[in-house]
Length: 142
Image: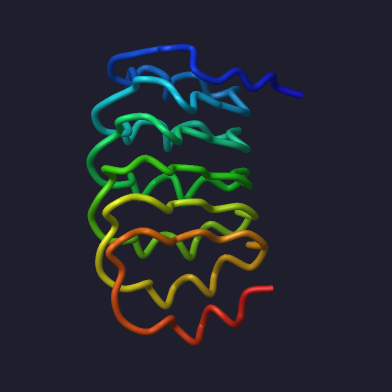
């Protein structure tokens, strides 16, 4: 079981080379001073089961490839400054059980592809700039 240590005061950019740690299963770096974009190379972490980068100073869009990680069960990205639409790849996150994207600037509508998240049991999208109806397809999730 990984140890969760908050307020380490780790600062700077997330190194793209982290994507080379293909055996990595858990990455918790929440409540630090990380900034900049989430490197798309993190989508190469094929064994990743849990990723928590919440409460940092991350900006940019959520890399769509994160939703393609077959082993990912927990994705927590509460940050304040992530923006853009929810990627349609969200529906390919079939193993995802916990998804927290609240407190960002994610805009647009919730894609109908969310119905692909068959194992989701905890979904937080609040405090964003989402608009439009909740897709009926969300009811297809167990």
